[in-house]
Image (tube, rainbow, N blue to C red; front, side, top):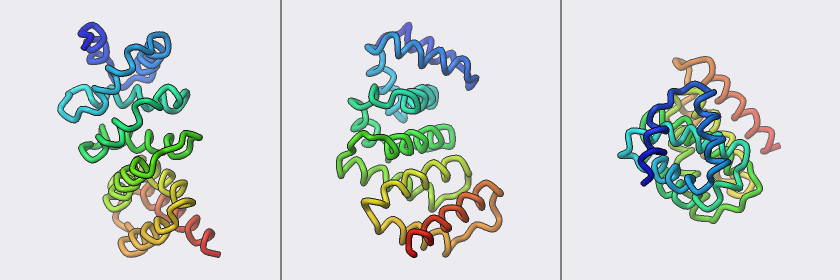
Length: 181
């Protein structure tokens, strides 16, 4: 691994300017993308969250650059833990599902499992929102997702959570009910 690159990644903070600098570095030096991806998919790496921040920005703007690494990302989803990891991973899932990139059946299954876990554990609004957007997109192909989301949200409709979570749940249920009509 390139220690100079790893060192520069380890020094960034959550400031958008610093994340954008790292993203631009990858655009100019795509040979470092495999290193970034390796860090992003390694739950034992203390800089995993920082790498996921950069992957998130890349997927938002130029998702085709990440095509070769989708398999690694999907395989790593089951190991992702902690709010600082779950939020960017959920957003990456949303970008992958809403893109024109063809995901394999296995990749879709792994994303569905990860995103359904976010729906069941609806403590944070952002990961829940990103996950439900991904799930609703995948539900056009896997219609059983609608029923599962509806069951999860109606059974355990969160009343003692944040307004953001409540809003996401209610909006998702509206979309599901609209699809049923």
